[in-house]
Each structure stands twice: as C-alpha cells, then as structure tokens.
Image 1: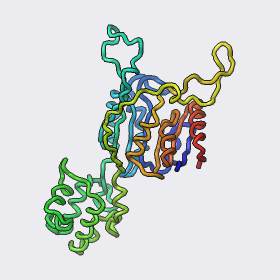
Image 2 (image 1 turned 90 degrees about the vertical axis):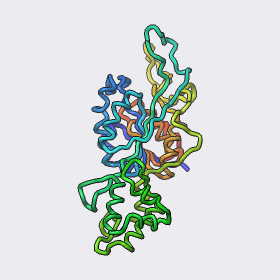
Image 3 (image 1 turned 45 degrees about the vertical axis):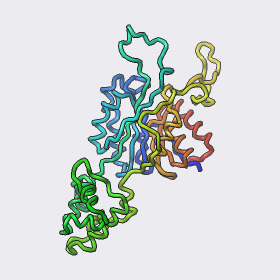
Image 4 (image 1 turned 60 degrees about the vertical axis):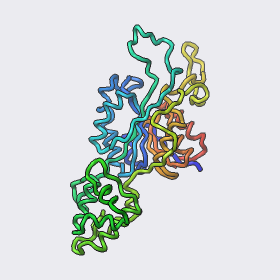
Length: 340
C-alpha cells in the first residue's frame, strides 16, 4: 500500500491553509548555521525564523497532532521555549549518533578545542491536552483539571469513580490527580466514567463530560484527543546510524552546466542534510496509522514525504528552492503514486 502526496514549490506558509489536518509534523528546517539562503547565521536567530511556522502548525493541529523537530542541540534549545508557548508539550530528545565515521579529517584538537560533533537531535512533542472549561468557553484548562471539575459537578463523591471503573482506588489516584502523577484515561475507562456520571449524577447538570454541551463525549471523540503511539521494543532515544553515503544519497537525473566547460553534467551531490529514510520511517510508524496525514514543511529532498508514501500515509510538503523542488518531485514521482 502506497500513500498519496502533494508537493508545492514555495514557502510552506503559503500552503498550510490548503493542507489537510496533520497527524504528525516532521520539521527539518533552518539550523542557524547559514546553510542555505535565508538560514540564520546563528542559532539565536532561529525563534524569529520559526515563529510564523509554529504559529501556523499550532492553529491547524489537533490534540492528537505530534511534532518531530530536527536540529542541532543548541538550535533546538533556542526553539523549545517558542514551542511550549504555543502549546507543544515536550516528550523526549532523540539523538542521532552518526559515529566516528562522521568526523572530518581536518579536526585539529589544538584549533577546534572541543570533542568532534557527530550527532543531530530530533525532539518529539505532543500537544498539551487543554479543553474549554465549559463548551464554548474561551478559557482553556488542562485536561486533568477538566476531568476532575466535571466529576465534581455531578455531586457524586470522588470515590464513586473507582466504583464506576471497577477498581480499588486507581481512578481517583490516576485520572483525577492534579499533579505529575496524572494519567490520561484510556477510551474504555473514560466511557465508564462518562456513563456513571450521566446516569447517577445530578440530573440538573447533565450532560457531563461533554464537548458540545448537548451529548456526552463518545468513544470515537475521546480517542481523537490523544496522539498515536506505536511502541517498538528495543528502540531507545539514541539512534545509532551511520551518515548517508554513496547510493543512499539521492542525486536524481538533474543535470547542470559544469564550471568552466559549461557542459551538462549529472549532479555529483544533491542535499547536504538528507535524512535517512529508515529514521523518518521510525518517526512516522511510531506516531501515525495508515492513511494519516504527514506534514513536511521544509521539504528539501522530501525524505519524510517519501517515507510517508511508502508507508501508506498522505504527505504534504513544500520546498522553495527550484532545484531541490525538482529533485524532490522526481523522487516522489518514482514511487508511482499520483498527485492528488
């Protein structure tokens, strides 16, 4: 099963409103190293560069949308406060260790007074689970506060939640906790709480646990408030993977004039920061299901989109550089799946 894709030539800011709601976003944009026209020269400038994109992601995201942000460690550190300000919840920092084979031959310990850098990072975020205090309310509160306040509205003792779920004390200890021990109620547990509250709670306050103020939340609705996660046993947050070399690097069939001779020659290299497909597939497999939507705002060679299409997902990407756009278009077209 292969997925569908849409690649746009231009700034992703011009296309976000036309893209379907993302299940996950894979960002591999500016690193603050002056690596391409428009890339800030220093990591300190990255928040200004990313702010309009992060604002757009946040506006189109749902509670179930996830984000994978590739960067250097200092680049990510500068971007992180901006993400939390826009409602993204940090989960973990994944380290791509490229190994000693990535060390350049000209590393001189007397000149470059640090250990050689052979890593990149990929920070994983979910959406902070916030809901309107009441249906239609402009005030948003954390889901754990909403769960407890809705139960208290019923007039029932908190201990009745344990009875509803058929447990000794897990419901009140986990799902109504207001601190760091709070647990997200699984769908089956939530439906037990909803049913008990609306059957035994004060009739004057019904419906309880409602998103629209008319009917209690359904199992399908509740499922959409939490991001997908497919655990892969044995995989940690350190990704031991050599850098791309030789046939792994995509060069395509593009030809350009060689210096001095002006004779057409096949590109000897394409994109300096091409990501391995297996790492992109790891991210996509962990946080999406077949048919889900993957955004790749900063396409480059569109490795995330290629991985998404190969896994049966729907990919949206953009690339403003005409040469990279043509290479990415050729690469995606080789998957034999039409533009939709």
